[in-house]
Length: 58
Image (cartoon, helix red, strand yellow):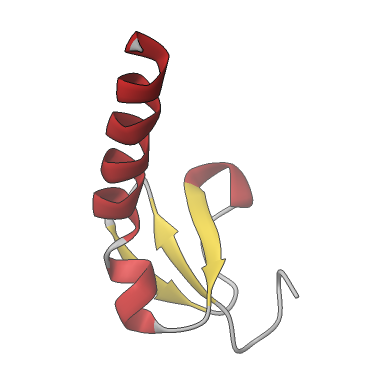
């Protein structure tokens, strides 16, 4: 669960993946199961936002 020592997060303040406790939750996205997943959080968010925009245009 969130806050567990095994969680990975993407820090919006530092723009990088963080492991375990770190910056406040208001400054990060996650949790993610791996460093790789956290590292690609912004890319995935952009993809999802574009998909939602395209659906709304229809």
